[in-house]
Image (cartoon, rainbow, N blue to C red):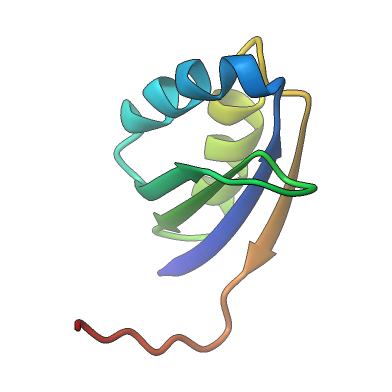
Length: 82
């Protein structure tokens, strides 16, 4: 399994459209519009790097409002519920 955080730039007025498209991708486990230099983040869990590459290049980058993406591979994760 490969987990990654993808940082997405898109016009702020279109962030809802991008998130709606991200919801359609099974491997996207979480996404949110955020303030700051980046407009949207998405957490993706893929089977391997080839699948991750396909998700980002074929699915996410093909959304018309997406301007750029930056992908960060998670190497160690700690999750907890509060």
